[in-house]
Image 1 (cartoon, rainbow, N blue to C red):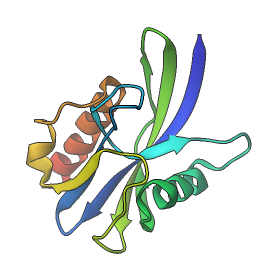
Image 2 (image 1 turned 120 degrees about the horizontal axis):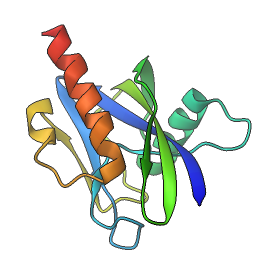
Image 3 (image 1 turned 30 degrees about the vertical axis):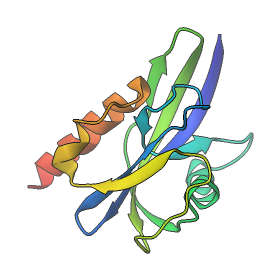
Amino acid sequence: MKHIHVTCAIIELNGLVLAARRSSSMHLPLKWEFPGGKIRAGEDPGDCLKREIMEELDLEVDIADQLSPSTHTYPDFIVTLYPFICKATTSGFKLAEHAEAAWFPPDRLAGLNWAEADLPVLDAYLATLERKS
């Protein structure tokens, strides 16, 4: 079974978090996710994350922290997510791949219809917020 390695960004700005909704033509259509993308051979995950966020959202981010990787098995492939907590340098973005993206208060994130692989990342992120409060 194919195993892909993907970075994902939990992008924060002014107490809000950016979530992106996959387009209807993407695998896992219309599911919400933390944006990111496949790590190229020999590529540093942090460099991959910044490249992918620029390509997908035309948004610059600063990496603030890294969460533990999370692996999920779908029926046709395995994905390992490498999540980073990031700070956005601006609130504006342009969608290149996703159907939509929006800034949400952290307490509204759990109500979105997430891609299954992103759920443990969401839980880990919310737990870090709880520890900080």
